Length: 165
Image (cartoon, rainbow, N blue to C red; front, side, top):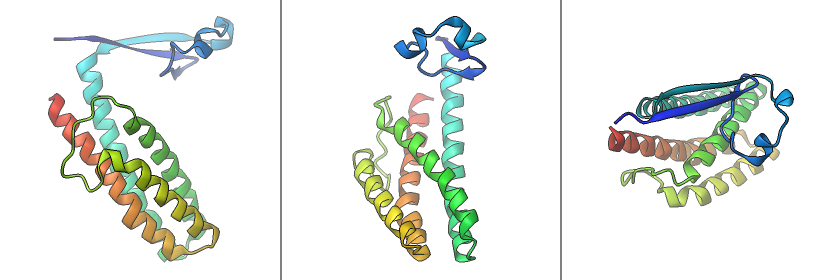
């Protein structure tokens, strides 16, 4: 069954919450151009899951890169990449916190229910290590706390993709 799916673009940017009162209450002249693109929901869902999986893989790669940079004492470059990684983690957390019908991933290192507390603990450790300039601790938190969370999310995406195909 082909279910139509629409994407709304306001001022050239995709508006994910275009039904929100803050968006709907704006004057049309403030919004700029409005565009609506239609597509097949199954195709859009499949493409979105593929893109999410690729972004998780990139974040895993980025984690390894940050560790290498810190080991090579390239702290400034590592911190720039760490900021990007943390932005991605914030987005992933928002996505995976929503009950969107994610498949159960019994083989995941960290269950979906545990991720919030595990991530909070990891970020607290990361901030403390960063404030004290403990590069080894930053690497340990990335490798032993953040990477397992990213891998668990990736497993969740993989299981969900299997379930919807």
